[in-house]
Amino acid sequence: MTRPKVKNPRNRLINFRLTDAEYAEIRRSAELYGFDSLSDYLRYLYTSGSDVSDVKDTIPLYEVAEPEVYTETERGTIYLGDALGLLNRTLKPASVDLIMTSPPFGLVRKKSYGNEDADKYVEWFKPFAEGMKRVLKDKGSLVIDIGGAWKPGMPTRSLYHFELLISLCRDNGFHLCQEHYWWNPSKLPTPAEWVNVRRIRVKDAVNCIWWLSKTPWPKASNKRILAPYSESMKSLLKNGYKPKLRPSGHDISDKFGKNNGGSVPPNLLAVANTESNGVYQNYCKANDLPVHPARFPARLPEYFIRMLTDEDDFVVDPFGGSCVTGEAAEALNRRWACCDLNEEYLKGAVSRFVGVKPKLPKPDAVPYQVFPPCSLAGSTDDSALSNNGGFKRTPRTPKQKSMRLL
Ligand SMILES: C[S@@+](CC[C@H](N)C(=O)[O-])C[C@H]1O[C@@H](n2cnc3c(N)ncnc32)[C@H](O)[C@@H]1O
Image (cartoon, rainbow, N blue to C red; front, side):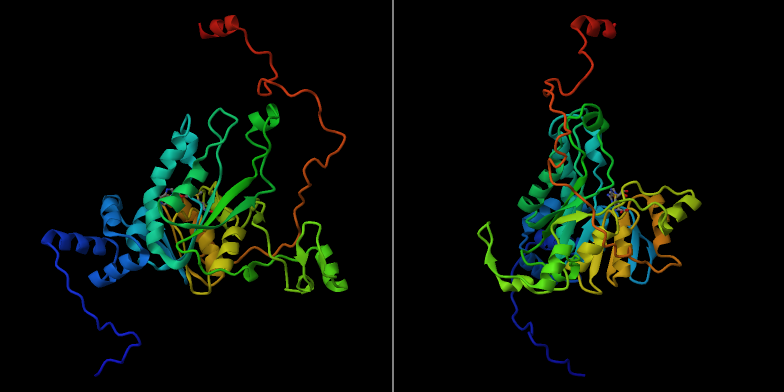
């Protein structure tokens, strides 16, 4: 049987000579990266802008075990094991449309002084970042939800999440499409020592979400994530708008009065993280399993999956925890994979898929309220600011201090 003609036939052949050692090394790299042929691997290196020396430097890091398949659903796979293996061995290069994840940030809390925590975190993340770059398609996105951290015993903040962002762009060549901020209105006022006792810092209620991509043009549409119009916008749409020059100098045209079905949301995502008795929590409680302590609300993956992927696209969460990302992806008809090191978390996570149809949270159009700064006029404390970090007790004298040491 004759082969059908292809549109772009590969009819140019090049020959180049390699030493046995070079050939063995390229072949080994191609296998390690999951390519079926040397030519596919070389084509990948060419189109991804990497060079062979990058690959050589990083290979030893990737000699990690592949995670095992823990459970499969209609559209997804849950893996048990190290995400390093998933990203650098199990998944095919350039196969993923969206990586939506919240990596562990406990490392920072365990460290004690200075910037070392941030440096160590970035170092630790590097092989994961390289794996993420490897598996992402050129039009794909990487979305990282990452909480900030206080330096131990200090009312100052670690820079680790900013350093991570800079390293992902400078060292790994990712592009920052847009930073988002997740405001959790139900966050408790912590750390209590700085916020409630000394009153020298405010409530820490915002996580950073870095939306990155391999090229400056990932697939995206804000039409997929429109927000309800405000009451004032609704009345403007009803009563019409007169084009005029705003005090800010912006010339607002009559297009502003067009009903687009909803407003383009800001990059501040207001979502309370309060779910306490859904199917997942009830299953964990009934089976004496730990409820994952650092889950993100399903609305976060829902928002990015809707905006950045189409049906049947492939969504991956390498630090999957309780598989919230998998649940949102399955409900939105995307293919997906989640991975976690801790089997206890995965035992609970399967309850999201077995015997139930994964579903998204109900649309909830009740807005949260944030007051403009300084709107509680007349009842604030105007007494002089303290110079001792808000420490109310009289500081101990040197004599008292030395007695305590005895
Ligand atoms: C912040 S949690 C993610 C929670 C998840 N977004 C959810 O909503 O349930 C980070 C997870 O990464 C997992 N983890 C840490 N190191 C890992 C690694 N090398 N490979 C895979 N998972 C890892 C931890 O067990 C933890 O469950």
